[in-house]
Image 1 (tube, helix red, strand yellow):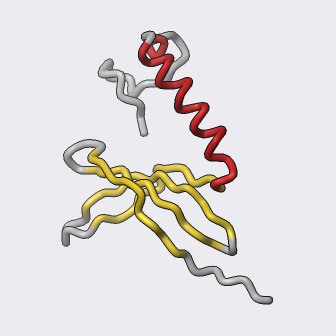
Image 2 (tube, helix red, strand yellow):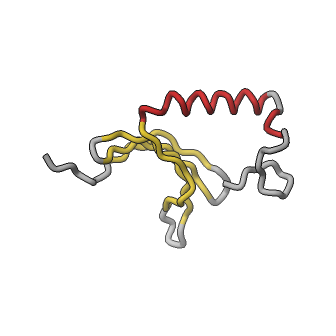
Length: 99
């Protein structure tokens, strides 16, 4: 049986990252596998939203581990641990990560 390389996407959520970018969360099927994709989009001169290379795609089987990592990051941020040495920032002191 031949596998299809076509992609079916289902938009799960979308929110503004800033005035020029959006974050989109989708589920995608590719080669008979389902993937979670969190990607930054920008608007081109014609008004179309296009994906950047900035993002993450993982098999849905890893969503539990991703959720655990995000929960740990939320807990650390709430405790102020994100300001500890070794956490990368964009170097301008605003605390925004460079991605």
